[in-house]
Length: 129
Image (cartoon, rainbow, N blue to C red; front, side):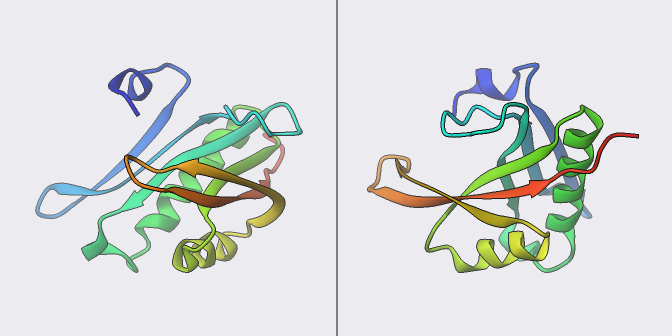
């Protein structure tokens, strides 16, 4: 991911700081860029990360809720994301958020290392009021 993606007007980022000031977590989301996405108008979580020493404190829940709110507020009807198939902890987190796999899978290179299998998760978003 290059810096031009972080400054794109299509991306929405949410950051949470802790005390003392440090980046506790962030979530980057925006319109889906998933070529496999069957429904137009999906909102996608591109990245959601919480500092390892701060996990389990509700930061991920706050960041995920912000992504849902932003997607629904922008009129999107579904939220999607890709997660590494073997990452059981992340898969449990997204299941607790109400997300479910939708059957889509892909193999994607990860950094400079080997390719990994990913599965797509989906959540229907509430209609904007």
